Image (cartoon, rainbow, N blue to C red):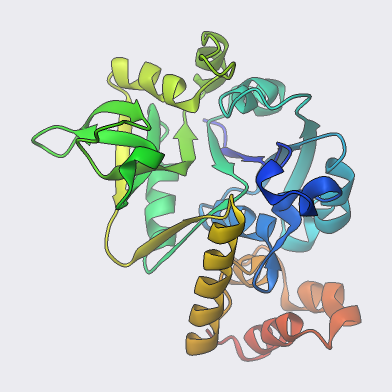
Length: 294
């Protein structure tokens, strides 16, 4: 079995952030002290995914390459591919088909990130299971805004409803999806929805109909943040700021993850950051590496 590969979907026009996004991808906007894209990238790293394809627009890919390069500074391999037009989340599996080459995948939306004690263990457990598809859900107070997982009496997923007018469940489906090797093939079977997109909900329903869709519920103590609007971006910034200031840690720090997973040596990481010693972010990494704290 091939190692699982990662896909970050960081496309779209970011129209909700206009005029900021008139010259910059929303995924490069800061969530407090780090670019937004660091958070989805770090989530894949926590799942031990090191081979990653970033999908974005032709305009923005050069900007991502400038920021992330080929990923070697974090022990990763990052490739890039253009999404010619934003035709739905499931389209990313078709775009990625050649890159995946029959490998299982994990797709994460570039404006989503997750936080909570034990998150890494849960991601690893799901990633180790190559059967079917696994999606994550979190309880929300406004389920009509999301795709919702309806559960049976045993707590197993029985249906997925996109933005229901009357919701029978408050388990919203989060923006990270683990798939077996069949996802690109199933994505090619989809027809565009009424809004002209290949819907990720429809792809997940194929797995559900085959009895191969599994649900991982994130309950109390976990946070799922979607920074897709100015208001939600501000909330994400405030969340990260509060945690980092209170606890003295960094959320979604790729260098720290790479070091603790022993993908890179201390010397390699320090050498890559030597030009930025005045940054509080770099000072934190120096402290982690020199003292092996946090």
